[in-house]
Length: 283
Image (cartoon, rainbow, N blue to C red; front, side, top):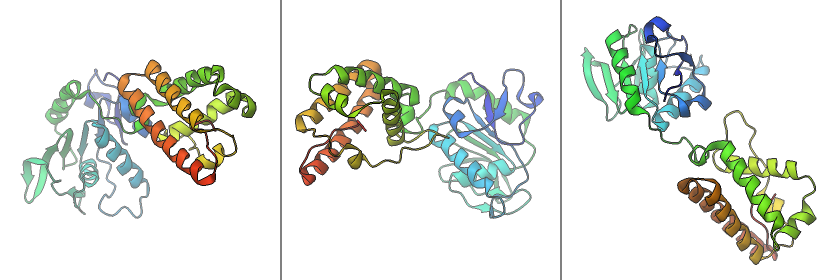
């Protein structure tokens, strides 16, 4: 990971992070490619956030970073935020202080409170002034923590770009298919809109994209009345699987095919109950 570090406000100065690293404001959609996340002390409460609803957004950001395996360093109130995101109790103070999260190792104590603790790729320093040596050690460790856990199935398959590539390639094949082509020719008049609609459906199905509107249609209703039989559904699934495996890496293709199979089973059950058979993923 060679991109900029992410940070919550106030952003650290270049003098603090050194010439190798640039720092930008943290956003959820930047987490997947971030080398690390900094949580500086900002003086705001952590134990009681009723007067600071924006704290919930920050906690969601920190939780997303931890889930993805993004290294996180917090100090002062940032350490308390990190502890709270890990499920630890937070005691009001100046600043608020986190108890030791489950599974964490305490490296130093200030009385009965953990001063310096780590768990996995999370590093906390409870005081408001971060020791330069601790920051240097954290930054030096980042290259060894470059692997990431996808934050959603959408990330696992390669994001919206990958989904759109599969959808586009699939429908190019389906329109030329002797079995499926006539169905689409009879029911789709605006192909660009159709491709965008199906892409939005798959993006939503795979976990959604930050800032993007979710697909809110009804799957069964969208596919009712097309006169499609079980043979069409089987052909759709086989063609979708073959397309995904040609466009995507094996693991990503297998994920898309598995989701399509579940969807096809659902549509097949609904069609059986309603006396007709529907088509998977074509709304």
